[in-house]
Image (cartoon, rainbow, N blue to C red; front, side):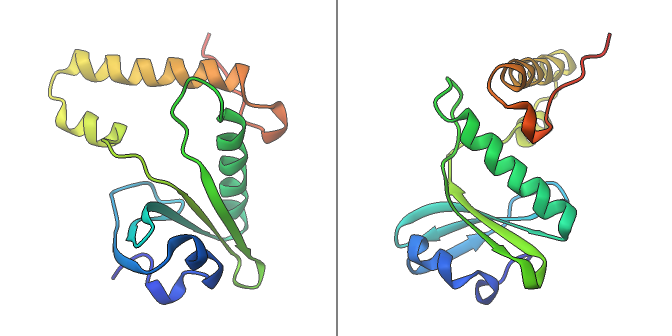
Length: 146
């Protein structure tokens, strides 16, 4: 079964999407349903969370993405957020970036040293921007192992 069916997507998002041609679902974590939508207006990422905790996490993620806009990192634009409090779920419609996820790259890379290097580079960038660009109010401060 597909994680997101077209008839579940809030009507408000179709103004940004236009007519949906295709939706597919990449491998990803378990805190949300994520789909890549191909529509008359381009490609988009759609994300749905269910439950109070995961809706809160999506809200923090959107806030963090907005805070990181304008840094040297390629940050996807968040076009629209819809909170459906009665259904206890939230949706985010975001910019799609062509490319490979870290998960995909790690899976394909067979050299252990190179895999460690990829993880280290990701961590070092995350730590740099967590300390310098993200406000403490979103609660995403990194604790460094010491």
